[in-house]
Length: 251
Image (cartoon, rainbow, N blue to C red; front, side, top):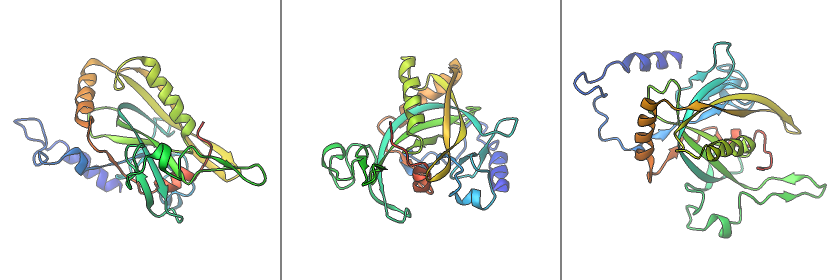
């Protein structure tokens, strides 16, 4: 995996000297590309079990790249360029998707999520012993983002479901309180380890960093415009395991 990443880094310099752009990419549309996720290495993650990364690491689900600070701690800065909601009902074995809505409003069978879907994401119930039982369907908050150092505008999705619902609500509050364009601020992501009756699991820790520099702002504005109205396909491998590792009530 590291060799592949090294080759990618080496070939990024091979661009059309006349235009400054890589050649042969003109026919690709945003909907033709699966956007990787910024995920957390959980105890159930195959890469953690195989020793490719540590429990709590931040990593790219497509390339496998791990993001750490100079002290070796999970850390990355990012800019959000689009925000999308999504609802997913996983198969019973967590191996695939049984039911999904890509906009969080209308499911792929045409039913309205909030009123007609029997697996509404907010329907937490109470068991015979008073325990909280999670709904069958999960609402995800997908933050289509660009990672530091912001030299490449290829996006990555920071997807937050049940396990990271509190972090999602916090990030939403940060974004709303700026009263500026969604891409006007830089945020940081790190992780911390939590524990409940199901065991230990990693969650996002999100903090505001500061205003986006003017040159970067212009590039993020262009990316925002490219994604406006476009269908976003997020990489879903391992998403079910990440979603249910903590399985906490959303708010």
